[in-house]
Length: 132
Image (spheres, rainbow, N blue to C red):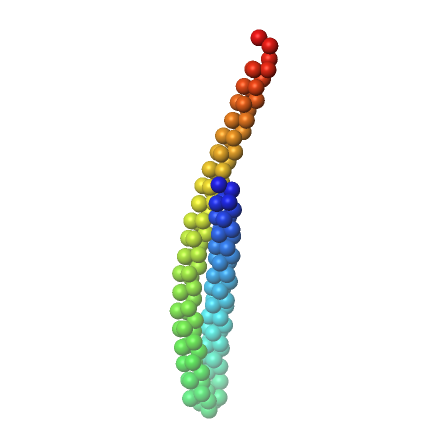
């Protein structure tokens, strides 16, 4: 029982680490998406504020806006995929936590049975040892 419990606890620890890693990856994708959005908005503000430069660099600005939009679409898709992975990891953590809790309960019951058995044996020895 003890070996099985330790093995499940180790698996739970690894699953929790994998979940944290998935969360970090998701947070990084969200930061990248926010940065791309800010760059996109910054270029649009530039076009709106100074039409003279926008006319000079119109083609370049349009290519850059398109490039940012395409990259943002890729990052957004990756973010959604990573969010699904993060949820999967969370489910696995929950499953392993339930398995660990169940095994810990079984181990506790086994210890309690053993303790009760020892107490009953001690009581039995006292009866045999005491004068009647």
